Image 1 (cartoon, rainbow, N blue to C red):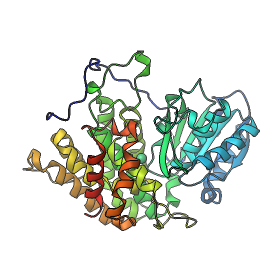
Image 2 (cartoon, helix red, strand yellow; image 1 turned 135 degrees about the horizontal axis):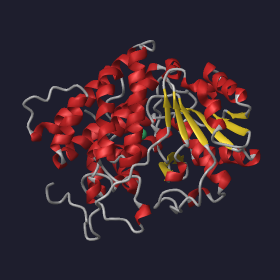
Image 3 (cartoon, protein in one colour; image 1 turned 135 degrees about the vertical axis):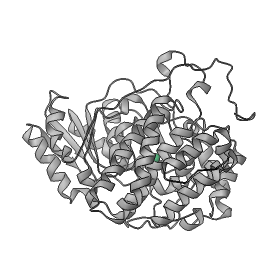
Image 4 (cartoon, rainbow, N blue to C red; image 1 turned 30 degrees about the horizontal axis):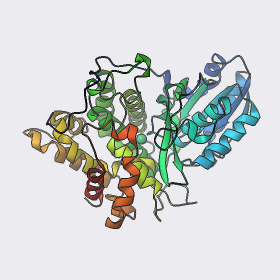
Length: 435
Ligand SMILES: [Fe+2]
């Protein structure tokens, strides 16, 4: 590792890593198993099912409700989850959860729905001001006091991996920046991942969420090594974002191999069951990986890109307000970031490009960043994603505001393989303006 990229090792290097395995049921038709599984997780019978307005009109909701009813559970549906949730929408969902005094939670939807359910379960169980559990420095970073009620997460997009992580992300409206809550206690008790439900996804949603998968995998694989962290005291306080480790490496590379062969196919043809199945399994593997390694700069930067959204209306998403979908807001920064981070681990950056299908024969370490960047840009063009921040409305005059909002994402910035200051962050955004 070149000098200048070394982190402070004064407290003694970490020598162990933790694996928090997720409980998962994966396969076609798995959603029908929901009721039986939830029955084993609670002795109560009052269940709340969180979803959003689009999903409420689809057959998957009926499928989930029927499965719960067959298992003798009483289900109440909350279908007002905000796509790309905010502090306001978290509080509304929490109020509903508090009033209902539910025994168990089900989420049926994308990352927005699953994250909202995590937050509602948390604040209904351990009431506090919203910022109490939010990551520092934007929030107080208070520890979650105890276990949460059972939560079965049923993802319907092939990206976020939220069903496998203890992270809930939202838009803090007052500051126009995304932030989150991170605690192992937030991890769903069980994920039920059914490729059948992705058949109804618009292609643009497949593309945006697919790039979220790719970035989870590449960022986990290129994060700072877990051994570069100081050993925590007490040992139980090891962060979920512990850096690249042998466990996360496995899931990351396999996720990239699957997504590399299937992302474009899944985008082009909703009936390509093999491709959409590949992508959902890749999302699950990448979710397991980044739930134990953590992501870094492209995600830190995405929170600024999404939070400061101008007039960009994302095709395939609800047309109620401008938004840069999460996966799009992440991958827009990724080529710029990997061109810069490649020097910290050229072999790892090349391995990511190769897993995605790039020809890396004869490549030298100096080529690694450019090869990975070009591989991503090729996939973005093939799925008609915006290419560069200018394509979603940003200009040079926005670089300072973007950098200010990204540098405060401490959990993510600290997980980068190189130390990053505010000027470097600005330069990375500048590199992402157009490709
Ligand atoms: Fe993500």
